[in-house]
Length: 208
Image (cartoon, rainbow, N blue to C red):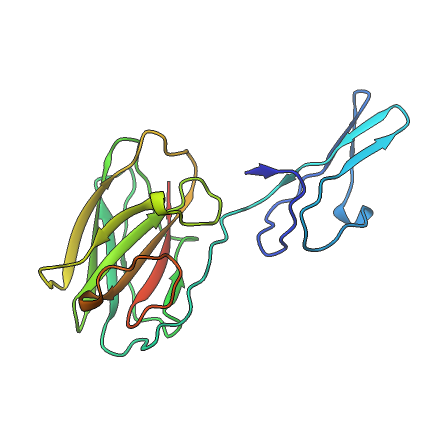
């Protein structure tokens, strides 16, 4: 995503500064400019016979990290998340995380074309869980309400839950964050992407 000088150091992935001047190109380092470390700034540099344009390419994939669950790893956890039916799919088996959150997005990815259906399964240990899934299709770092693609209360109380969702035609291309959240089935599927859970876990994956 390309923005005009938005500075959040944790989110900043690549900085590209290009100044155009009468057919020539001159590169500047960010330290050449006396800019705040954390603010939204628009910079327009003007010199004699020179119009300068500064652009930043920023990684906006940073998303909220949920707090530790009230009872982490006590009586249940997500043991496996799997996808099938896509261009690329995965099966990820994991142990319970003491922080109640694990980000697998740097190494585990599912890929689907628009208007195709993703089959996703969740397995828990010790007790049945209910599940929700969000995909940050617009890459704004927020799992919006319309980006909720699965909400399964696991009414049958099974240890493995299978669900499906269709990738919309309007889904942007590129790599997005997919968030999976599981909670004790008696409490229902998580309704928010970043609040504290009672017994559950949160896992992030990449989705293209």
